[in-house]
Image 1 (tube, rainbow over the protein chains, first blue to last red):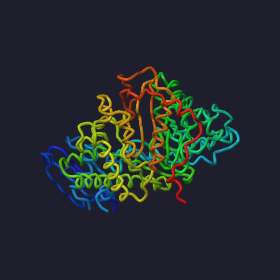
Image 2: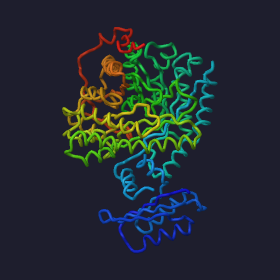
Image 3: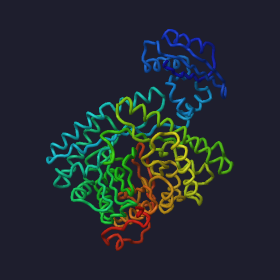
Image 4: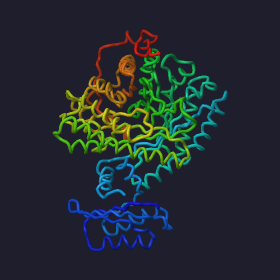
Length: 90
Length: 454
């Protein structure tokens, strides 16, 4: 399993989850978990996904998600999981 | 799996609190590049650097993208060049040829600094050491990204006062040779006591002779993250303050450890150490001084500053050591004046003096760093300042260093700008009473009593 963490931050609007999920589906990236919360009126979503079966390399996925975010006026960031597990788990 | 709270916390550190990995530094041994012909030695050095570090920059950038963490600098440290050139250099001009080769090779592989134009002369200078030191002013003038350091003392050996006196002269000559660039050459020159072999930070990085062929060392950063954490415990007692700094340092260092292991694995090079140093930049919110001010000081330099810095330094180490499998280098808090907005402001308004900075160096990781002084400061006074700082290092069994810039043509009240990470600084006043008779005695200061531990 090659886990990536996708965070979406921005002003809430209709269809954010739909667009992100459509992209992930087309890229053969399997969603393992979705969490969302509102912090200071900002929409915050985290998707944990597995890119093992995706034909695309990580840097392409990261760039395409960023571009998708730019289209919707949101900040979408894809990162490999290790930075979070290393920082917060002993 | 990480929680959304943890993910947002990490990303807030990166985006708002300027968390970054300050440097991935590849240490490369050049010992076997030595020969009896300077041209041949230069050729071997160039080939070795290109072959070994060719993928360093692209690997650093790929890791940065994978984890979403900025890796600000990719750098190289090499074996002290006085050793590498000792068989083929017949004068300072031959050492300059090696320096130009290093500059060319470093630019070719795309790193932003290369350290190791160095001599280790804690007890005495060989002819080669002296030639290298004599070549430093020209080298720092004619090269762009080569950094130089000289280790003039240690707790085990005492202080080579001949080298200290010589370095006073060399700093002054370097300032004069680069006077048209606000004496910028001196920003690339460090004088050490107890220099570590595995320091990844410039300008003092070199690849010590105790090291293997190649190694990856990583320097973390994160003053902004620590400041944000300290801001959140305003008014709490010292127990809470110390725990907060320690926990934050742990998290910051874990990122450094991850990056170090990834870089070592992808480059197929052994992982050396993570250096825990909190390294400031002139950017807003990336200041060590402002952490101390968040602890409750009106301005850095106020009474209490040394104690606050001691807390910071110690807690950073306590948190960091647990977070990394190998810790080394300088590991502490840096207090470079020109590279730290809070230091710059405090120095400009007179809250912070060189004497207070000297006291602060007793409890933090390095020394008098990136301090601009009047251009008419004498070489004897510069040597006296180096001797004071080296004595602090020797007696306290710690690394100390001096990176002073006597800015030719400028005096107290004026400002000098070096640009980029090196920042800008007000010219600080230096005690005007002479130490010439003291530093001109010659010889060396014996090793201190506590060095005799056998």
